[in-house]
Length: 159
Length: 438
View 1 (tube, rainbow over the protein chains, first blue to last red):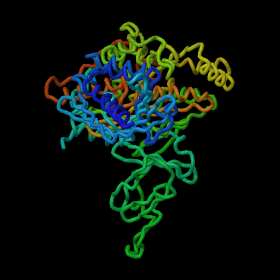
View 2 (spheres, each protein chain N blue to C red; view 1 turned 90 degrees about the vertical axis):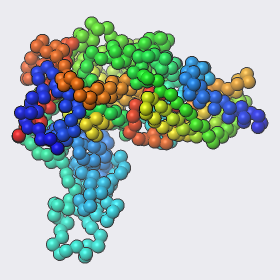
View 3 (tube, rainbow over the protein chains, first blue to last red; view 1 turned 180 degrees about the horizontal axis):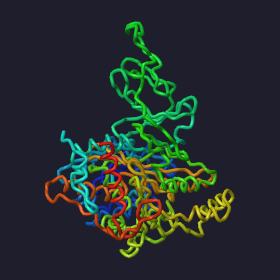
View 4 (tube, rainbow over the protein chains, first blue to last red; view 1 turned 45 degrees about the vertical axis):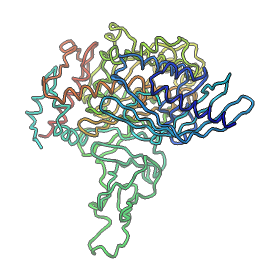
C-alpha cells in the first residue's frame, strides 16, 4: 500500500514537472479522453456549467490550449512564461477499489515568470486518477485558487 | 497638476488622429474621471440583481466605490461607499441585502437611501448635531434611471435624460430583453474580472475594431483549426467555433457594417457563422425549443426579426458594452491612467431552456475569463501599446482608416465598413464631455 501511495505522490509531482519543463504534449497525454480540467471562479463551486469558471475544459479543449502555447503568435505568452510548481501536502485516498480510482489532494504554488515579472498562483488541487496498466491517467483535475474571486491579470498559462 | 484648457484639449485631437497624451497623461486622466465619469450616464447595475428592498450590489463608478441599492419603496439609489463621518469604506461585500449600512469604525448607520439613521453615543455630540443634516448623509448620485432593467446613473446632475443619452442604443438593450421568451432577463451573480495595464479607452477602441483579429487572434484561430471539426462534447463545439469566429478573411472583415453615434456609442455587425453560434443555427433541438418559446410569445415574424439581429459589440459610451445576441455585458472601470478593470457578465433569458443560459456562461468563460484564449491576447497588445505610448517619440496616433468615406446616417452619426469610425465617434464625444462648460 505504501508503495502505491508513493506512486500516486510521484505522479502528482510528475504532472507538475511536465508543465514546468514545458512538455505540454506529454502533459496532455496524462489526461484521459473524457478528462476535465477545472479552475473554478467561486469558492467551493459545485456547478461547472451554470456558473462561469476561470477554466472548465475537457481534453480536446486543452489540446487547443497546448497547440496555442506552441505558437509564437500567442502574444500573451511571448516571450514564453516559465513556471515552477511547488507541490506539498499530497494526500491520496482510494475512492473506488473496483476501478482503482484515487482522489489526491495537494497544495500547489505556481511561480510564473515572464521577462522581469513574476506572478504567483496558489491553491488546493484535487486529482481524480485511475490506475491503468501500472500507471495512472487523470480523470479530473480541479485547481481551487486561493484568490479565485479576485480581479486578476490575464493568466495565459496552465496550472 | 497641469491645467488643460479647452483649447489645449481640442488641440490634442484631429479629425483622423489623436495625441498620445490621451492615453498617458495623468492630469488628462483625472479630468476624464471628473468630466466624463463624473458627468456622463454610467451603467451601474442590472435590476435583476436587486429585486427586493435592501438588495444591493457594489461597483465602481468613476472615482466612487459605489453601492446600488433598492429602498423600501422600490426606488434605486446609488450611494458612495464612504462613511460621512471619518470616510471609511463601510461595505466590503460584493452584494447582498442590508437593512442598514453600518460603518465598522464608530457605528454610524445609514438607511437604504443614504439618510443617517443613527449614531452611537448620541449625547456626546453637540446639541445642534442633527441626523437630518445632509452633510452627515452618504453622498448619492444625482440621478438614477432604468431602461428596461438596465440601471444607469449620473453622479452630477445635467439636463441630458437617459433616453437622450442612449439614443439609438436602446435597440441593443431592447434586442437583448426581447430575446427572453418571458420578456425578462437575469444577470449572473458571478462575473469575471480582468485587470489590464493600459488605458480604459483601448478596450472600447478594440471592441469594434475589424482590423486586429487576423493578427491578434491568429494563434487561437490556428489552434482551433487543428482541432477535430466535431469539437468538444463538453460544449458541443462552441469554444472551437468561438475561436474560429476570428478566422474571417480580410474581405469578410471589411464587409462588416460599423456604426458610430452621437454620445460616443458604436456597434458592429456580427461575424460568427459556425455551429451553435450562428444566428441561423439549424438542427439544434435546444435552439428549436427556444425559438418555439419565442414564437409563442411574439409570433413567427417578430421572433424571426428578434433572432435575426446580428450585431456583435454595442458600446454605450463611456462604460458598458453589450452583446445582445450572446447575452453578454462588459463594464469598463478605469483604475489609473494605465490600469483598467473589465468586469463581464452574462444573462439568463427567462422562459428559455436552461441550456441556452449554459451556452451564455460558456461564451462568457471563453471570452472574458482571465484565462481566455481570445481576450488575453487583446490585453497583451493593449499593454504593449501603453508601454510604447508612454515612451516619448512620435506624438500622434493615426485613426484615418475610412476617414472621408463614412456615410452620414439619419439622426446623426456615421456608418461604414473597414473604418475606424467607431473610434472617431468615441473621441468626438470625449471632447464634448471634456470641454463642456469650460
